[in-house]
Image (cartoon, rainbow, N blue to C red; front, side, top):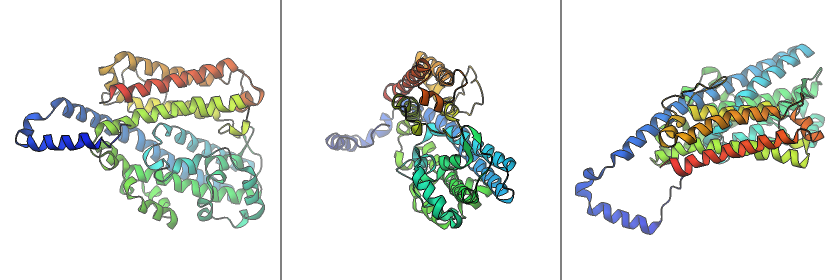
Length: 393
């Protein structure tokens, strides 16, 4: 993102010039700048309204469905209901991974820090076992929400539900109590993300009710005024953006570059080089490669300005970052669209031979495929950095 603060000396000169030219201010309006801002505003509107907020809505509602499945498991603790809870977890997980191209604003560490709270890994298995041994029987959702991120969130609930890529056949009473409390905490974090982006008055009734269940969560939301209805601020370049549509639009390309780099370097390359299976994300469910592909799909959605279930259309939406880049540098736009699909295909290829990424890391398999996926992600991130550095003005 471009910097907000300017050199103080230059600023003083600029003020003097503005004062001396006040009488002819209207004659010096830059129509090109105005037109560009209007273009940026249209792109931001579709990005927020058609990509970000619907993704968080689906995430929050999927988290509620997951909680319903866990509640049903409490009523009938058997393999059938355990499998249903695991399936519901998987649905919610997909929506979370499809949100990772926009891990700025409310979900960042500068605001509600939902990303860390909901998705930290590796887990602290010793601490998780301590909860199971000592506190699980009386653990409430309210208490779980206040625990360290490494013992709640998606990966703790995954650990309680899955083993070696499959739903577990049984779960102990202590594990079920822990799962129930951790699921409540997950629901509240997902509700926070949705409410913060859309504004509390604009979210579904079921999610609003969930947001108000825990007074600590609601107080936390109310205290962070800057990040309430963040989508509205981004669309209008208000709040943190101080009227700069260039800074606001840069969030799309910067967010895409960040997750492309994270997928390639942190999620794939690092555990493969160190052979540390505990560093593999989502390895209990063996869903890692699907997670990483969904991260790249989140980039595709952000770039096209709409959520795309399968292969994107050949012509992106008119109000999209892709369409704008195509007017400035059509070759770069073509490269980005092709590289997105290349990344997805190469990440999928890491599992050649029917292997999970856990097995690939553990046994150091498919080196060529791993290296190709890492390189593709690096190239995709570099392309998006070009947008922020050379296209947006």
